[in-house]
Length: 189
Image 1 (cartoon, one colour):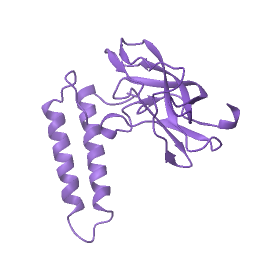
Image 2 (tube, one colour):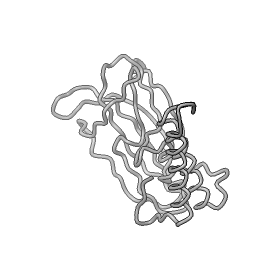
Image 3 (cartoon, helix red, strand yellow):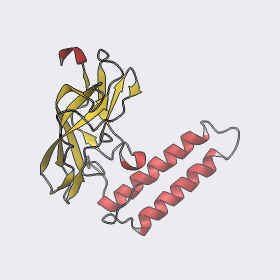
């Protein structure tokens, strides 16, 4: 779990995280007749502790679909671009970032927010594109949107590209939110 200066974890959340992780570790190593692996037990305990910590911070923890970062991304378009200096093809996603929290948040456009795959292989983010200035990452108030773009180095120009929410800080699945995950058919660009 990534914490910045604005987000403090209270003692109950910290203890819940520690106890759940410890319990998961002990149960995973408790004997040969237990089912599942060490990693399964650890992951389950860690996820439960995070959920408990989030509940204690939010009050009830129910119906809260806001991402941990407070930023929800939406893909608004896609096109081909060329790498600066080499001319190799890149996929450019036009993206809108919206602050869906009740606090000021920083909207980033660096490639971690959305993960793109070709044939199940993650594409590397690429930010130096001919004809485009670097996207403007900045702090935005609740409800405000910021336009930007994300670039991805393509493996080839024919295989469709699957776009899913990125993990971001701390590799949490819910750190960012993508309102419209999709697969882009490159032949239509």
